[in-house]
Image (tube, rainbow, N blue to C red; front, top):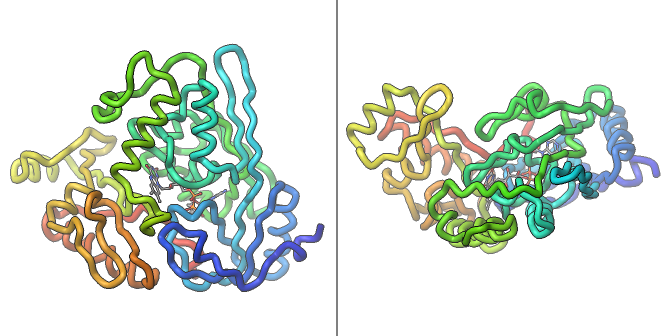
Length: 340
Ligand SMILES: Cc1cc2nc3c(=O)[nH]c(=O)nc-3n(C[C@H](O)[C@H](O)[C@H](O)COP(=O)(O)OP(=O)(O)OC[C@H]3O[C@@H](n4cnc5c(N)ncnc54)[C@H](O)[C@@H]3O)c2cc1C
């Protein structure tokens, strides 16, 4: 194959972002191997195309028109390396994350069951260190393999080198314009390790638990709480839970004794959904966007809106929270394909 043969032109990617925003990519390709990916990078270099990396599109705000080349790594092989009661689960970046969790849990392996039904690809999972129900993927990562866009070399990072934090990793910082993740390797175990710290999860799982029972319970809770992007376009939580200094948290707790607060590195973590809800914004609608009626952290798109309108809507929400609580909210979804 030659790389140019596999590059489509002027491609409508509107169906490939769960916010349902309109987007056209000037050039688009889905490599399935590292070799194909390297050929595409060489072609982008020759043509002076900027490169944007897309996974399942469940955490991006795309530009309406993306100049350059959008790459969606489609290699999706998975395999398990078994060593007694522990295993190393290898997943190519294009593997569908919810399916990977379901098949792993069904086979009786513990580790990733609390991360059931988080949409997207395996390759994007380390980017924001996906987390849910007391577990973050960074705890389970053994290594991440990526192609470095600077010289097309294949590199490997250990979990420590990935710099995982709350919804954060090196892939959002030093490697944000460099790494195209091609494989993740996760540690899983046959030994029962149920993580049932969340009361609503513990209530739904009969003991002794199985990984599949936990994954099923997590999926059921998520279906109850979160709108399905297939029915109502959204990107999950639109804002991160903010960490604020202890002094601000203490002052707020005095004014709002029922305010949820959690210990966190560098201060106190607050619940962004609670802050938005307390501004009376649950169910608030303007133009083509709104705050979901049951989940204040989720911005929904009813269709016909644009990335620009979404930005203005999100700013309105963040401004109201800042005015009332003095807390700045940070957006979770990542911009894709906007000029630097
Ligand atoms: C309904 C809903 C619920 C959600 N719930 C959760 C949740 O509970 N917890 C949570 O953490 N997240 C949640 N999310 C967010 C989202 O599912 C995750 O961030 C997911 O990992 C995104 O995967 P994706 O393949 O769709 O990535 P995309 O949205 O396509 O991309 C996200 C970012 O990763 C980059 N990227 C994608 N693939 C690669 C790659 N191979 N190499 C390098 N960079 C790459 C992109 O450039 C972009 O910056 C939710 C989203 C939705 C819509």
